[in-house]
Image 1: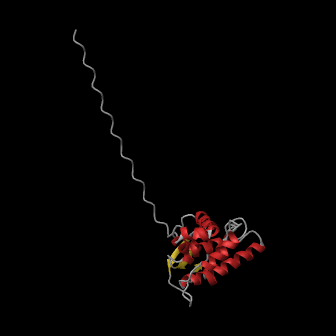
Image 2: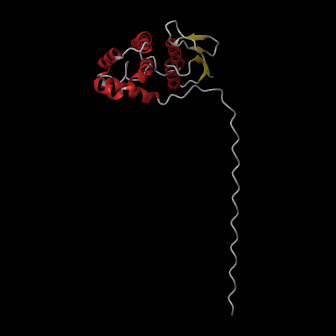
Image 3: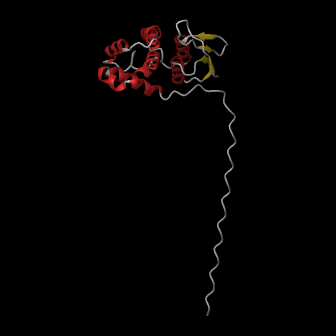
Length: 202
C-alpha cells in the first residue's frame, strides 16, 4: 500500500524522505503542500495506512525506517542514539545555516574530523544520519566540489558515497495509470515466389 506525503516537491526535506523510502522499499505518493515552520523550514506530513498523520521531517524519517528491517536506524541501541544525534544536528543547525545563506565551513570541519577513518557517520552502513546530512549539504558542496575536495577530502568522499547509495532519487509515485495495450505487430510480407527457370531449347 502506498504512503501519502504532503510536502514541497523540490525541498530538501522531501528529498530526505523519498531517499529513505526508496531504500526501505516503500512507495510514496506526493501531494503538493507549502506548509512551513515559523522559522521558514518545510513541514511535511505523512499519512499512514491507519489514517494517523506524522508531521515534520525527522519524525517521518524515523517512521519510514521502522516500517521494514532496513537498518536505517542503526544496528544497536547505541547506534540508534548516534543516528538521532546527527539527524537533530542536521535539522536544528545545518538546515538553518543553509536557509540563512551562511557558510558551511564549520559543518565541513566537524564532518571532516569525524569521517577521516569512517565511511559512514554511524556504523558500517548507511543510516538516516547519512541520508539527512547528505541531502542537506549536497547542493552546497556540489557548487564548489573541486575547491572543497582539497580542504575536505573525507567529507566530499562521504557525500559522493551517499549519493551513489541513494541512487537517482525518483519523484514520488503517482497513482498508477492504466497500461496501454501493446500494438499488434505488423504482419510480415510474404516473400515473392521465384520465377521458374526457362527450359533450354534443344
